[in-house]
Image (cartoon, rainbow, N blue to C red):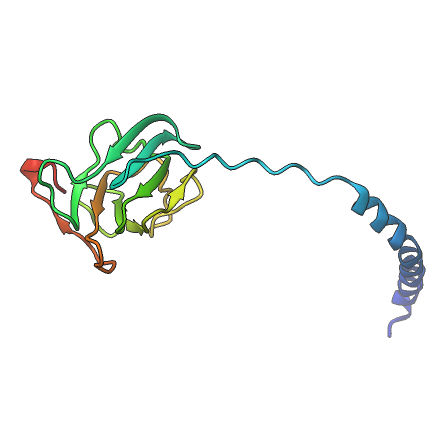
Length: 164
């Protein structure tokens, strides 16, 4: 061993001894310190059965848009969320027995995901599409799965009826 490193080793040994003696006292000090309070998660809102309820803001705040299969729209088919909700959805609650689907674009492409029945998310900000971009404020299309049907890419809806 190089002689130049011996003094550092000896000092480290002294430091190690001091830390060993002081560690329990430091541990007691840290254990007695209160932990910061956790932010309370937003209460799950009410949502009518057979709807995908969406909100403009995180925590189920702001404008609410209830998406469902109205006006003869078919299950497992992509539909435009509407001009108000387009690229403004920040939280959701899926009160549909089957899957609900959301997509970044209308026409839905490779950036899509599904939401199981009864699932909710009070803040989409940390969630990402497959390309790494944020899901928050970027949803343009939705689909409602048929009960008992597995997860698969929905068909494109009629453009004349608001489909994607």
